Image 1 (cartoon, helix red, strand yellow):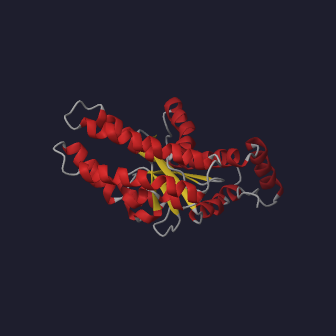
Image 2 (image 1 turned 120 degrees about the vertical axis):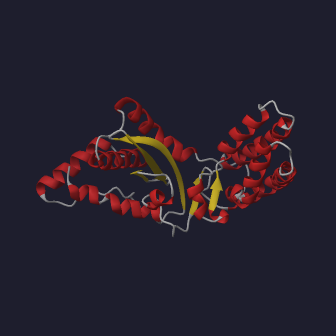
Image 3 (image 1 turned 90 degrees about the vertical axis):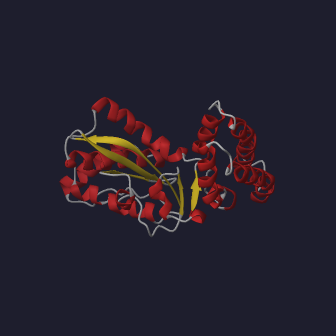
Length: 263
């Protein structure tokens, strides 16, 4: 495969870095038996994968720079805290799973979490109503106001609870409360991080079947080919045709095909 073609990946990585909204997530990987992290950053048209030695900020730097000034959709992993709350959207699917675990914990304070689940469900209903075109942006903002107030009050009530798990959860979420509602005010933002999780699923299957990679070169191939295949699928392009065009361009000295979306 043409090195010039793989060099074009840098161009669409730049497209990720300059996007308005990016969803990011990571899953474990293996390189020569050592633990690595396969990280993904996805927009609505392109996805970039990187395999890194760690999931901390140094690893994140290879995926999305600290200077990124768009909206970041993610879970609550510590490395993402370098982006301010007003620039983030926390994944409500993760928050819901946390609440369900607390609700099923069999503790005296478990009802606190159970009582918080209905307003979270109301939030999703309001969002889906807007997403499906049944209401306007102003309409969903109005619908969200009492839901936001209820959830904020419940989290404030959770901070002094005797059960440490609820105390810690409430404190953490309140610290990032502005990142709960970016979805209400910013176009193109979703309340969950499902976009990034979907992009990672095929790689999880690959890892389980192929046991990762055996060298740094193998890891570079994996992150590049995953980026190419995933981006082609997002854009409705034929992967085989793109790859054969890249080989043909390399053999004939023509410019490599681009992965950037067609305007």
